[in-house]
Image (cartoon, rainbow, N blue to C red; front, side, top):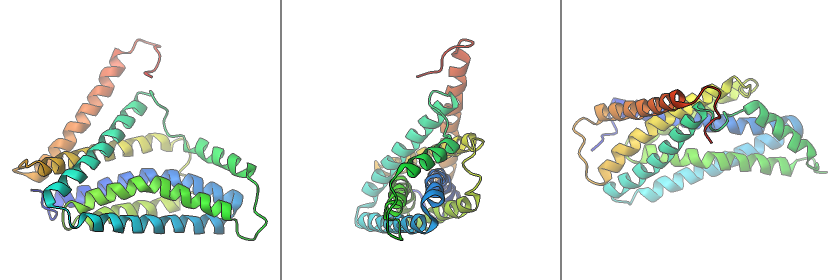
Length: 255
């Protein structure tokens, strides 16, 4: 069974949580900054804080709901969740590397949001309720995935919830000072690399904990975690290179 006190697991949990939260936070901030610019800072701030409070209580409720679940069942549940998130993110990162789907263009997202907000009718009251609700909605909508990831990473073993939460909080603290430069197109490859790294780590953790849930025994959990992460990474890189080599010169992108 995986021990939460193992250094490799504590560090990997914090890193995986940081990467996953960073990707989501950077997209949320694009919308919140547009709201602050077009509709006013106070409404964007109040709505964002309300959204974070909802996510905080959602995290607490999820953690408490898992407290009475048998350990093997809990590991199977969180392992399956992490595998679903990790493999989906891994697939998206590979497809974006192949340009089968477009890279995140946060500058375009920011400009689109500004245009949409300028078209909305302004409220006659001093406080812009529409902007506040919009900010709260985007924080909750994009933050739900982070909540599930943090809970799945932290609730599976005692002592891992703190590093999982710390990774998510640190991502938010890093994002805020970068608010005026993050949405430039140069950030797109960085976001895809972070999503790839998060997908690799989440898939590795999901494999270990889902294995625990069905009775698998890992003789050296830390070494197994590293080996699985490297395995997922090598498979992803190998697949991308194989597809690129198989493309004809000037051929169309994969759809």
